Amino acid sequence: SQQGEEDPQALSIQEGENATMNCSYKTSINNLQWYRQNSGRGLVHLILIRSNEREKHSGRLRVTLDTSKKSSSLLITASRAADTASYFCATDAYNTDKLIFGTGTRLQVFP
Amino acid sequence: DTEVTQTPKHLVMGMTNKKSLKCEQHMGHRAMYWYKQKAKKPPELMFVYSYEKLSINESVPSRFSPECPNSSLLNLHLHALQPEDSALYLCASSTPTSGGDTDTQYFGPGTRLTVL
Image (cartoon, rainbow over all chains, first blue to last red; front, top):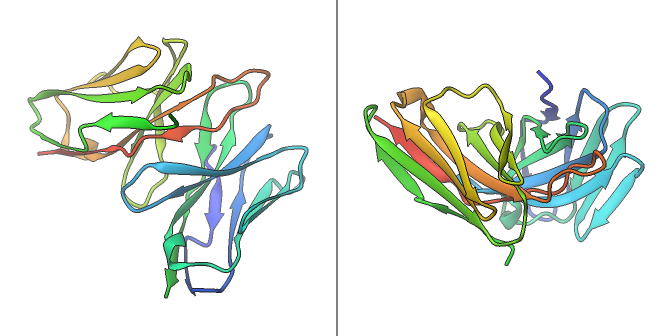
């Protein structure tokens, strides 16, 4: 399977703490994306990082990419209860419209 | 308008029924997708339409039949489903890939399907 792996599978933290999720993938990529999914809802795009970028920020989100290790991390700083959701990384399959999703991390932020 | 809409939100059907899921977007996207998602699992790609033509079929059983009537609409026709087909069905749209770079996908809220 081309599917990426994410760890941890589940993460529970208190409001105000930082949350870090890791993604490993198997093939060469053009870009890597992170998506968020609230329970039973559609996915929402968070951030896209290209293969020639090493770090990207968007608000409280920080994404890093290490193509030599085929890995990425998503850091959410100063977490809030509203950040409770599942987070998926997704990589592109070269020159197709296909995204390959990782296994996901379920984040629970307690007030 | 950055919204992808899906109807119905919930669907319960018997194994002999025929039903359809509908998806609509008005962002001018020319790539549209169907995904199946089981609980606590990532979305699994089923079909991709690019410029209204089926470009990817991930070996989906023929009891699922996609249709793209125009650039804004995507249907998934269901017939003779099995209980294991119960899942959240997600539609998404994006700009079609060019130069090898896959674009952001915009997802609808999904249809929760239960097959009895």
